[in-house]
Length: 452
Ligand SMILES: [Mn+2]
Image 1 (cartoon, rainbow, N blue to C red):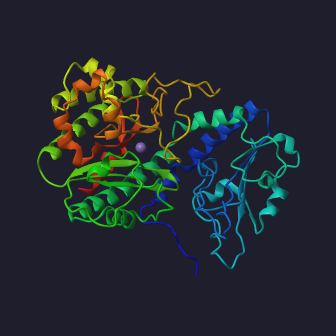
Image 2: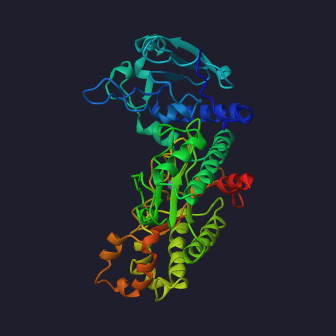
Image 3: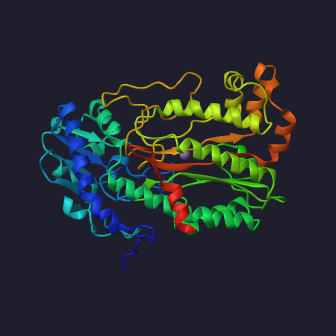
């Protein structure tokens, strides 16, 4: 019996209605890429599993994002898309015959009519489908060794990749629907995680509740979930999960996503265990975050929005007695950066930190980050149907506060209030938004609202 891996969270009917237009958009983008590269065929390789050193098993397979942005086959190594303008795209589908593993299912689903599907049983059999004039081909994908390139010499040429990466910044309706569903899937998990936290569970058990609810194992999550109780919430990419519950739970910061055909959601919530000061601080910070969400629309410069976030955090620090002085001084003297040391957000798509965030156009021209903002991942002006995160944060990070010692900014920090907040770790609130002409669609808030 074939194992069915389709999840209850995936509504393929909704996706199918948008798929034809998605494929048309991909054709246009690849036509431009091939033209710029002076090539006739794009050969998009799904990828090869990477073996663990000195052993006989593999790291969990992550397919080439360029491959999975064409079709929902995220667990199919040694397969190829062969795109030639004006022709039906060939899908070389590797269905291994292997008694150690369960082979991939037969191709099925809404996407199949758009491809000329050729099933192969051995990776080498793909060669017969690659155009013989290899000099007219470009290869798009990751190569651990040269053999999957089948003699194609032009691998990921910048001329083509710049066009593909710039184009990926604006999503098709199909991709947006995937991400809507991915936000829904994650929201269900966040509700379960909050419940586990309020029941006094450990970081590990909160994580397990999340995974069980969204139906992802560790290898299927779009990124390793960050589950920090108390002071661990101040570690930006906290990577551990304590097995033992905290003796006195105060706060939870959970940054966890989900995926639909690899299209990701990336959501952070912060909770206080009890009513009181920290709960109030979270509410106030949520108002700040929603204020930023209200600022986005097509035409907005995201780097400006990041700088605005620093202004808003300066005011927040003053309002809550965490710092004193003028807002200008708090920004200029690095106080806001000590409490908020990361970027406001990033593009989101088939990769959780999607490509193209710094591109001015499809030629590879880069928009530099504002000086002193090295962690910002998106500088590109916002366009309708971009999907991105808005994730301001505020943390007590001793390493950064210690670096302020002796500087002018240090005198503006109210250290007794900081000492009081330290056990709570920090706050981050992260939504995924789709840019529209006049504002945005908040995929994350819409998902949580459906659960009420
Ligand atoms: Mn994020």
